[in-house]
Image: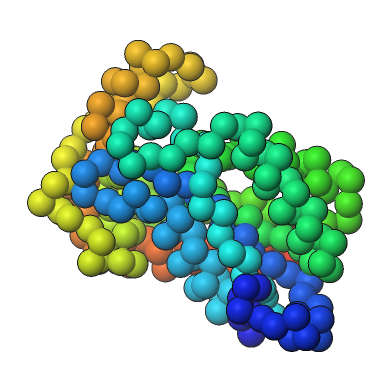
Amino acid sequence: MIYRWEELTGKEFELLKPEIAILPVGTIERHGDHLPLGTDNIVPSWIAEKVAEGLGTDVIILPKISYGVTATLAKFPGSINIPSEVFMHYVKHVLLEVFRNGVKYLVILNGHGGNTRELQVIAKEVSSSTNLSILIIDWWRDVAQQKRHEIFQYPGHAGEDETSAIMAIRPELVKMEYAKDHMMPYPALKIYSKKIENELFPEAVNGKATLATPEKGKEYMVAVVNEIIKAIKEFLSKV
């Protein structure tokens, strides 16, 4: 059964004694002119609900962490960037409080690439100092890669895959009349350069958004949810 942390009364929470929790994490960030600024919150929150439904056990979903590290696209109107150290300090203490409240197994569903490194560092610190076991999943990168490459020719930030996902989940929020394409491959090496960032995201898009369809998004999201359920079951069997 699915429980939502913020909707429970204190007594209900005490009686529930949740052991498995899911925490969606995202950010507010420009996704071209056609997708909502909260895309990186909307998708992992939706996935959390579907995954919880499919796990076949009691799961509590935490309120999402809506603001993240958005340095690369902070220059675009609508983006809200939280400094890395502030984000890490905040999320670390959320995780510690989750553990203090009895959770033993935490799944972090991350919707934003700028959070990845910070979440990994935090998870290592918290799991080392407590008995909390943590699984982090970047939904667009860690699962359903075969399906992603089968369906999409030009995936990327606000590109064909992400646009299709939102079209499947919240079609009323997508404004395809403003969709644009920009295709530039990411550097193979880890290069940090404002020049390269500007070339990658001149209009906060990298990919071919105009090829997106809700049908592609639905097929992709089914694969993502199913593989995450499988990954969580494997995680729970090991820890």
